[in-house]
Amino acid sequence: MSEELKNVTATNVTATVKWFKPEKGFGFVRLADGSGEAFLHASVLAAASLPNPAEGTTVVCDLAQGAKGPQVVAIHSATPPENPPPPRTRNQRPPRPTASTLQQSAVQQSAQPEDGGEPLVRAPKPPRERRERQAEPTGPATMAYGTVRWYNLDSQSGLIEPWEDGATVYFDRATLRQSGLDIVADGEDVRYLAVGSEDAPVAQRVELI
Image (cartoon, rainbow, N blue to C red; front, side, top):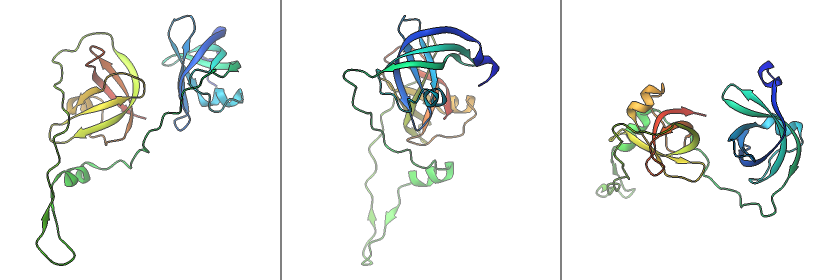
């Protein structure tokens, strides 16, 4: 544990597990006093013999100020929820393709039948959902996590499906370039900084996780 996290800022704080991703090794808790959320790392859960807490689990914990905000550094007790929600299922993330393979897959090609007959032309894919980017989105910036629903090379734009409830988040090629990325693939897990209204958020930054 770093020296920064040894400086405990609050002890015996009651919080509720908002979500935890065992495959990622982290999650967040919602503080009972309504002051916000705190980062929860798998190492803290392992020390408390609580490897995979269900959403809604109540914990009594200590907090410290981490590099990106409040962070749980110790858990003293945990109470499972009376009616735990069903586990969320998500498709396994596919291998990340390169820009060239995505461009090749976007081109519709003919399929040659095994009997040597006339080539069968594949029907064009229906147009994907597209939302125009706000010229100057306003509102407080929010850091969150999600999965790329799709990214279209033709329109150079895409949508992110939040891990939590909420509207899909729009992003485009300019956002990726500002984030130091060339391309993202469908199914990629990302962390993003979004601004705008709740029903039409726009990503200002996208990071792979």
